[in-house]
Image 1 (cartoon, rainbow, N blue to C red):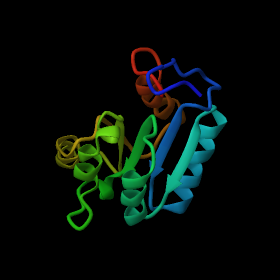
Image 2 (tube, rainbow, N blue to C red; image 1 turned 45 degrees about the vertical axis):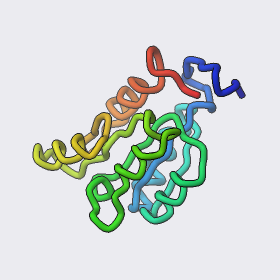
Image 3 (tube, helix red, strand yellow; image 1 turned 180 degrees about the vertical axis):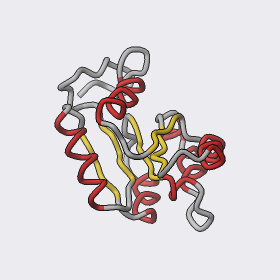
Image 4 (cartoon, rainbow, N blue to C red; image 1 turned 180 degrees about the horizontal axis):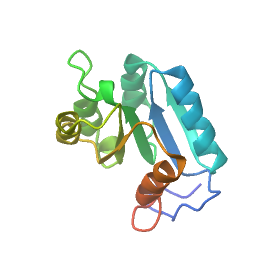
Length: 142
């Protein structure tokens, strides 16, 4: 594993590119995990927002985070402000997993601090293109 000061470009089969999936729906979480692991990504799944906040507070950062829409603006658990207030997590790209195309919800998610978004249903090719956008080329994995 490279030292913290050394970065490398993620490759198709490079398991050091780790994605944190925050998704309450177990079936959708399992599907995302299957698709991502099949492409060579390391995947951590969190299905409870309270566990997600504890993870952010105690674990080293991942290379990319995917968060379900409902967790982006919950008032009881302000996930994005918590995420963005931890220096080690602040620069991690976050993809909002939106339930449907609703411009108001997308704008709220972007305002809350997500880097980008995907709208359900997630087509595997588009999903992977979006992830590669933030884990290859100019965006480097840790």
